[in-house]
Image 1 (cartoon, helix red, strand yellow):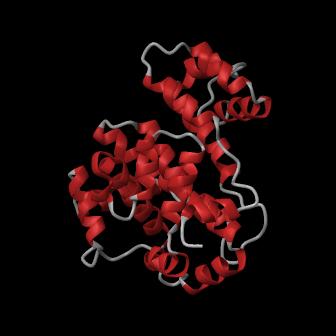
Image 2: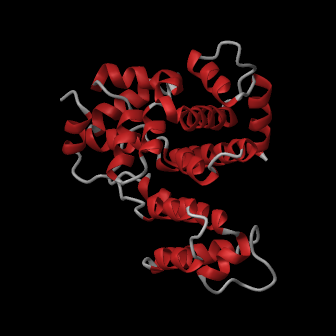
Length: 269
């Protein structure tokens, strides 16, 4: 079993698809999208509607008068903000393994993913790139770990435990053990979920952004967002020993070590 197809077939049940996200991303790209279309997409899931309204009425976003429906929420906080709330609400379920995997802690993975999504969002806003797409990439960049854990719970758990002190080398260990890494598995999973090819390529090539070709900017965001999320947990004194892929990602986006340090502080805030 040395192909991602075989691994995907072995998984008894793939992670839950955040199927609304590709549809909402398509709607956001159309400047003529009507708010009612967004509301209709979200309204198919009453539970999701309730979570969106609850978050829109939170202390962070809420105003004096509570938001009563999705169109009002879009008008109050903006379509992009509503999208990110939906992405967070649906992404959490997608990053939950069906059964425990030793070494894979869902809450730790979720916190890392949300932090990476915020870091990616901040960078994309500064670069005037597609903020919603980049936020999604940060949120789902490690979804392939769920696939690997579902396919090989015991073996993958042992690998995670052995790489805990050196997470930067995880992809190499995955390829040595399974002939693929979680980046490739995650990209194939996003393809299965019907995400645009540019997003799937960015996930697959997050550890080698230049190899993503026309999608290298998206891949560079994923690479740097992952680094920033890790830096918030284990701050590094510097990036002098950074991997060549990190240098490539910085060059692709026109950033420097100082830029990355600044984004770490802004993400922490």
